[in-house]
Every structure is written in C-alpha cells, then in structure tokens.
Amino acid sequence: MSTRSKQITMGGLEDPADEQAEIEAGYVWREQLHSAIRSFVAGYIDTNGLKGYEACAAALDRRWGERGRPVSASTLRAALNDAERNYFRAEWLDWFACRSADVADLLGRRVKPTKTDRELYDDLVREVREELPKRADAIVRKARVR
Image (cartoon, rainbow, N blue to C red; front, side):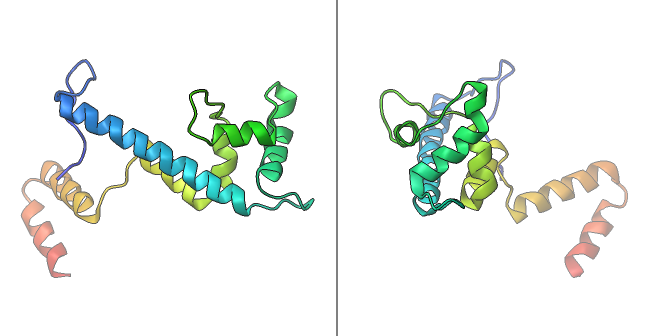
C-alpha cells in the first residue's frame, strides 16, 4: 500500500483532506528538522573551543560570510525559533546535514520518502510481472522459498 497521495494532471491533490494532511506533515517535519538542528547546536564544540550557537554561527559565517550572507549567533538562534519573521537560510542545511545524521535523515525523508520492505517487495514483484510475464510466477515462488 502506497502512502503517496493521488495527483491530478495539474499537479494538485485530488482530495482537500489529502492536501491538509500534506500541509500538517510539512509542519511536523519542519519542527522535527529545527529540533534536530537545535539538538546538534546544543552539543557542538568547534576546534577553537567555541560552543553551541556561537560555534555553529562562526562555522557558517566562514562558509557564507564572504558571499554577503553573514551569520551571527543571534541570527542563527532567531532562525531556529518559531517566530513571525524567520531568518533560516536553506544554504545552512548542507552544513548541518554533513555533521548530523538526524538532520540528514530528516532532510532525506522529506525529499524522497523511504519505502518499507513490503512496498519494495510489491514494487519488485510488479516489475518482474511486467518485464517477464511468462516467468514471473516461477521467479516469485523461488524467491519466497529462499
């Protein structure tokens, strides 16, 4: 069973309930992502002995400051709070994802959701039946026996 919503030809969701579920999932995902980043920041210590927001902001500023995108600890702190004005920058995600498996996992899950083993198996069986219709049942039986 697939968890993806059905798409209409214009690219929208068919059912308003599906659209609302997708919106709510996005809210949850954003909070999980910001929480994972805040957890990483809290425990981060750089090679100069800086800790937390100051250390992360210094590293991000070294990477982006020369390109006109300076980062301070207060900017980073404000970006990770749920406020009306948000200062979060997408280019920071690469730095955090390279250093935190939790952040990388959350980013990967939203961009390309992973399939369950059962979904992968069903996809494989469907593909075998399409590609090798005469031999498909024999191949599937052999696989189940092993």
